[in-house]
Image (cartoon, rainbow, N blue to C red; front, top):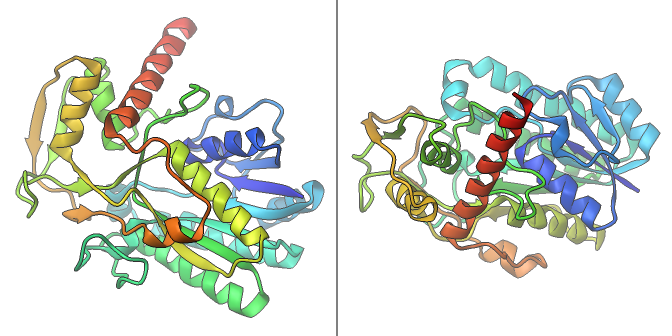
Length: 331
């Protein structure tokens, strides 16, 4: 029984790989390394370089490693980029997921966990957001993920594949043991960007929009520590192995922090100041996204360990410092 982790050399995927290895699971990673890094995953884990859209490669990997479950992270994730180049997102996120599902069904894979996003809700009518809230994405990224969710539901009904969809809110932080973290140089994750500014890797911190209908005018997001998110995937797999029905869970903490609150936390934890530049709103950014997490907490054996914003920031900052040391050592 092997678990295939697609996108396992990426930010969230690599945390998942470490969590699975720590639990004694057999793992194989499939990643094209377009945004991932081989050094983020344990050297003993089998690694296959390639795309989820390569049906022959996917089928071969499933067969060779005896894959019985797939945790699917591989995707493009930058909202403004999806607005500028939507077809690339539908190709990589939706079409490649269709190919992956086809291979999984053909090979008799039993369980599938899908990395989705709160972006499927668009601008929600009510906050916190329940899983049964209307889905109305306002970006091609969100639409590409919602299309994949629809395919997964139809596949489950037609072929009996059991699955869990996990809709992430804002993922942040890094492995407390500093084995992996967000390593993409041009990453747009707010906490990573703020930490880079605190360490002098960026000259300034851009704030996109201060006229939202929120207490301080900036966007509010529900930040979840990446290690807690990885544990949510493990709990979802255990749920499916126990015979649980296919379902969808929000992944967050049920409370939000504004952009200014995140910046204040980074300044507090790093004990450094850095310049802020106010810009206009970005296309595709909802005012507030906060999860209703009652379903995941009542259904899965999952209890977060790193809910404090300053803790999330401290782990992210430690990883940025480690990356700086790696760069200096390699120079």
